[in-house]
Image (cartoon, rainbow over all chains, first blue to last red; front, side, top):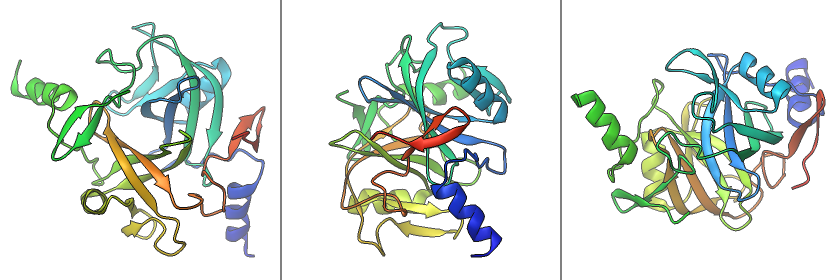
Length: 127
Length: 127
């Protein structure tokens, strides 16, 4: 293997955490309720948000619209208490298993994914 | 409300499917096993991949590295049979609930998220 292949193999199957930030410096972070298994939201993390999350065990993200670090629930109180973090094969995405302090969606819904596709439109999802 | 607020409200709470592609023309797509609830992978969809997925009920994505439409499992046979699709509040992300024909990860693991963070490194996740 050449060094590029070796780096890829290490990232994909090794025990070293080597997050692969995209060209905007971001990872994709999927937030799941550790008890119900419901996917609550998806957001992005830069290195600062990742570090803050790992240090505090509370979900921090990077707001692309406001271009700033964002502690989820800082205003609403609906923080995400992180129980476990998983990383995918190429280390550009994380799953955060959390115990949420309240609804994850700013609309008041438990999950941001509260609608399903039905025909050409959307209907309320069953869970 | 001004028209921008009205459009936002319609997108966030309405029954119309109005996918919000990012500046690269992509949505985030999270793939979940409909039976085990395990998150299998995360990928991206452009309009063509979304249309192909809706038409066939088999997961299609856009490969950013190869810059082409990608039918997951086309080579391996490990296709993703889509049972349900959810959309999030701002309609820039989808959840695909699927019955996978085989391992979702190219490494042979059931899920791409097969490692969890432990201290400074990674260990095999329990499920």
